[in-house]
Image (tube, rainbow, N blue to C red):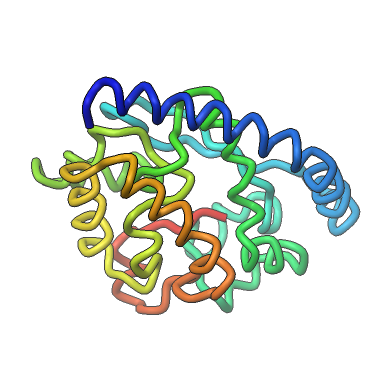
Length: 207
């Protein structure tokens, strides 16, 4: 992506995330209150992820699992039948509302609207030189791999799609991803990992 396009992309990130955070302020307050009333636990979930050039940062999400969920069962991994997901959390995940809080990360410049989904350090340690190209851009709230299958894809397939995005990124592709994302998210397809081998491989779906 050329310097001018990068500047335009950052301006889009700032404007869109600012407007959306203002529009979603009341829904976010209601979601936070509902989470608190549901089980009395913390409202937010923050986890370290790896950003552009391998720099770590902490993502913001609404908590959708029981407190200290990482210390039980599959740790940071989850499946559709995971009993750690709360009643409200299952709804938030289905609608993608838990991830919308990452607009804060976009506004802060740690993420972009479009890019590879942020991953955890243990995955990055396993990257090949080719796969590390995934870290040449900021992670995204949505991305090329997300609109092409989400967790229905294998771990290597997702990374390959992310690398393709890095090599072909443009404002037009970003616009295509943004316009396609609502349909993909609302369809519910690929929301959870389905194959045991993928679960054991170390992929991560967030919460």
